[in-house]
Amino acid sequence: MPEVIIHDDESFERALKRFKKKCEKAGILSDLRKHRHYEKPSERRKRKINAARRKNRREHYAT
Image (cartoon, rainbow, N blue to C red):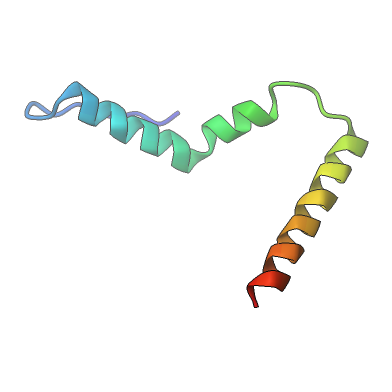
C-alpha cells in the first residue's frame, strides 16, 4: 500500500495528489476494477483477443 508523508510546508491537496499518483503507478485502481466482478476464463480470452485485434489495427493504420 503506498503511503505519503505530509511535510510541514505542504498542503493536504498536494499530498493527496502525490498519493493518487503513487496509487496509479502501483496499479491499485486498475487491479480493483479488474477484480470487481468474476470473469470467466473464456471471457478473459475473448477480451484479450479483442484487445490484440484493436492494437494491431491501430498499428496498421499508424504506419
